[in-house]
Length: 419
Ligand SMILES: N[C@@H](CCC(=O)N[C@@H](CS)C(=O)NCC(=O)O)C(=O)O
Image (cartoon, rainbow, N blue to C red):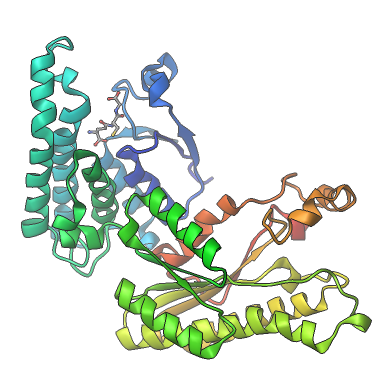
């Protein structure tokens, strides 16, 4: 039987590194969020799990693991297919641990002097606590100078090898802002600590809003770029792809998500114009976007991941939906063909087939009681899907965790098509 995992974390903490590693591993796990404001890390229930009263803690079938470097190595070794550590190379594996131990024992402790000075002096010794707070930014900056100049090879910590150290340095670098230390003082760290994203959209306002909210979430506006582009227009796609490469440097992952539908139309009333409007974005848009991305990836030679949003409409029939069904069926077929064709460039190509997800496109249907009464009983998980249900599969397909998955269609539909 597969091991079960219960992962304890709190938002904004060092536990993020392990959280990311678990996502990369692809293993199912339960995540339990602790509320530090409520001091849940000191509750008797949690202290029975981790008497240190800290996160991360990973409960496995064999017992509890604590301490970030130890858990990271455990995940890397338990899921070798995720490629999170050079497990066969004793020296390089020790280098990963050396880096992770530095983050845990030195940089994390520097950071803790800002908010948790009471660990080292009496809580009412305000002068000492303030002195520690004052010194923390300088110590953080010194540690990151050491990392930048001596430890991080680039582009990743270990050079060309992506490891748990990259997840961990990303996690700890996020704290620099709180010390008023600009991460851009450390260009290699800034580059290695997380992905940069270019969002494309045809509606300028929505595109800008998406950029603003993602930038706020990741706390670094410099990582999120936005371009207005109609993916059905060949010259716009070419131009926007070039602009995205200029903004991001190398592109390793491309997600063709743009899609349109229309109100249900019987075949006998469907105009050629309506049929083509849907194919133009849903099929030609994916073709043009993937073509630009594949040319770029084949040229940089590092491989990559192409993902398209298809739909359950690709695998089942729905009345008055022939234009949309045809377009999504075309996407899954295109994905299979490209997976075979592009494998020699180490480019993987997959599609995601969402079921009934609450979006602007479906909101009218799911709010219609007649529709809900007919469809909901066919969804075993008994709820509509949400945008957040796609975070896991997106990270999985964009990362090396899915390095042997190509040409596949991933149904994310709460079991709808199985029932
Ligand atoms: N050495 C531990 C440190 C863990 C740690 O200090 N975690 C913090 C969050 S970043 C925590 O749980 N703090 C709760 C507290 O101090 O009450 C590790 O590297 O995992």
